[in-house]
Length: 292
Image 1 (cartoon, rainbow, N blue to C red):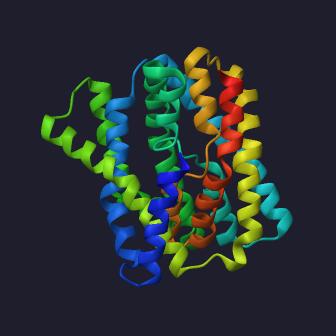
Image 2 (image 1 turned 180 degrees about the vertical axis):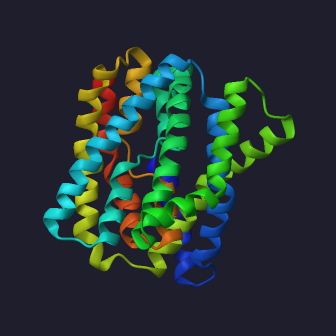
């Protein structure tokens, strides 16, 4: 899981150190095209049984509330400013359920696991990208301006159109579906390159305490909460197993995109993506063993 992630991130780091690529153009492309494409693709392909999807939605919201409360308490105890608190939220709330969670679910539970993981990822694509964009925007501009910013972001409309098509039972036209698939498949690689570029150009020297806290919460507290709360919402079988797994993975790559776009402690969030990914193999292996 981490080998390709580290190789692509290292390539981005080398490009950033050599100043061949700047972070801002990659961020702009990600925000304007790649994140909306991933969200649209996930929503139009991953939604299946709506009753299970409703439970996954409640479950994901519950995780966000509990982890958010822990993160807010720790940030307040440390006396961190608003920007760093927001960066810590972005680094702890959102898991890498896409490019890490989907192949792991397929490996562990076969096609049934992949189908359930796609459903969870569709829910996360809607909630996480909207919430992450709002959190990052309000770090600098406040809640009201953040809502106006959210209304202007392409991801808002990609999610809205995808959900509308699903509710109406309309299959996207073949060229649209294929374009979204191609963009979604290439998006993760570009985002990982961006993280490497960010780490080269905005080094997280002063962010190591916050990165350490983020790592403990994301890989320590999040799996425990995910395991304990799954029965509360009636998740069972493969849906329960995949939901726990995907809620327990390293920091989401898209969190770093939004942090970079809005200046919400990008060095902290990018550092958390790398560190949690590096530290994840052992806890994820233990979790998979327990779930299987």
